Length: 227
Ligand SMILES: Nc1nc2c(ncn2[C@@H]2O[C@H](COP(=O)(O)OP(=O)(O)OP(=O)(O)O)[C@@H](O)[C@H]2O)c(=O)[nH]1
Ligand SMILES: [Mg+2]
Image (cartoon, rainbow, N blue to C red; front, side):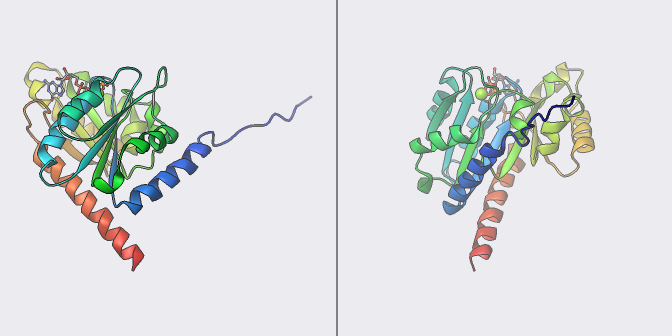
């Protein structure tokens, strides 16, 4: 005999509703929100630190940090000179919209142009969780191998931009930046692609320009929607 078992579809539905509310809040403040996704140690925080250094004179940045434990990353970005909040997820491998909602109690969005969310180090879990962001950015660390876009396609498919990091190490690696680019474009031909070293600063100019461009585009589209 077949039983009627209830199947709960869209288990992330509550998250999506909350993310929509967050998106409205971000739009009201005309803030661009980036969700940075990558495996542990790919260089997310170092990229954020260099981004702060590069944009500090022009834009007001704020950072929400997600890690299983510690406030090490929030302390690092706070030392770089911007307001920062740390979320500890315990055993959780991704951030969820309700965590962002709580962290916003600590940030005055009227003082922000760009909010950067550093998701928990994981190349899969965060992909499906809408945080109300405008753009998902995947950091692909070259030492981890140029095959990662092929092996973890979902996060690369969801990315608006892919930042290949640690290119300064290329001479010592079997991986190649060119191959990483090709593999990324095979999975997601529309992704904006950057190749950087967050240590030396190489390749940062186009990345910083992209952020400024996306902020200007968002504000222009909000303006045209309101007229
Ligand atoms: N050689 C080199 N090392 C880098 C680069 N970017 C980051 N690192 C180093 O990589 C290590 C991890 O960097 P983080 O920025 O802490 O990485 P993360 O992705 O924020 O790590 P989690 O938050 O723990 O997931 C540190 O030792 C950095 O100094 C880079 O472009 N080149
Ligand atoms: Mg980090």
